[in-house]
Figure 1 (spheres, rainbow, N blue to C red):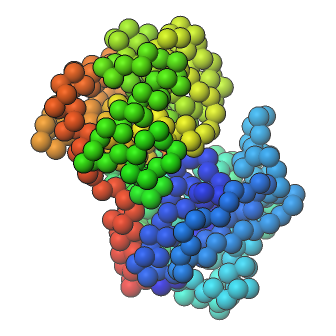
Figure 2 (figure 1 turned 90 degrees about the vertical axis):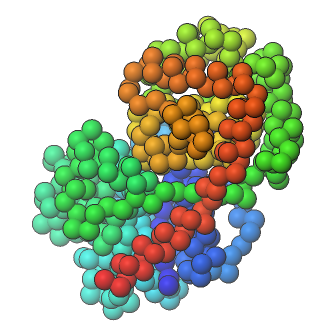
Length: 457
Ligand code: ADP
């Protein structure tokens, strides 16, 4: 089976969020199952080094365009999104199909990801429809986050060079605007999203962002396939980015990582103080309001808190102010930094994810891998991966709250602190996380099955 993966970001080359983790791992995990893939992404300025472990089943291609991709940002700059993103990603999608043909990579499946490549299923059924090369090619669209749809002014539709009739309610049109993701959802042969719970949630008004009807009307229901994480990259047993290596058999290295994190945050170095971490995009989705409402009460509970985040300016201000009010017990790092992220995952006792919605969430899975216990809202992929340790002591691996009420978050945090005080329980919870297998192995098998079922039908 041959799959053409097209994405706007692929780790380790370029990453702004979980999408890159997925597109950087899934083709390789599928490669282990014998699936051959070509991965294509734009060649942005200053791409990072090559992937360390090459795979005979995966080839990576970069599409160059001086004007479109040789820029400082991936999607935009400090003034906002680039105004020509429709042209940039439309160019990329068209070129990806042309390149596949040029190199003779005849895909059984073109796998698109999010709005940036949602045009691909449309292109296969329009511009490339008569092309014998793609005659048997089917398309899959994975929605990593339905909140980002690729909206553009209606007058930009002509830049896609498609039949004007496609700018209608059954195509790209969305309240007078162009909506790239909507068209992808309509044209793709199969659509999936990144967790079973999120696949249900996006059929509702609350989480559908105007596309719930389109999602619910798909002839073949949208499937939920949970993401995995790269177990080689996220491995406390080999991680050179953290102070000391550790494993489920010997957790002592985690204590060293915590002491190291406390030191670099300027906190009191004390194993008995519970340390909460957060590594996140600073976006409304992440439930940051819930947190900021209770931040002062939380920080009066004898805890320490470290945040690494980047995103909306309003949240930058919110967190900087929290840091100023609690200089000895909170450390706020604004920016995107892979090394610091590893140190927080390893050094923290608890990882906070009060998300309003979370398509899958990687933070909780990475936390498990480092024996760090998530405290999260029960939504999307968080609901699919976490079991509350008080409700189900035998299987519990974290602390959950459901209602979007700040006090409920505080209550879950309180229960986490109580568990922290019970050393045996704490150790058991850490071990349960460390033993869990959220590697790509399972997810890749599910994707392969999903592909096979589509090709058979
Ligand atoms: P999303 O895709 O919504 O941002 P996910 O939980 O699916 O959320 O994935 C986020 C990924 O990005 C994780 O690997 C997380 O560690 C990483 N990440 C998020 N913010 C930062 C940051 N400021 N610095 C480093 N890594 C970050």
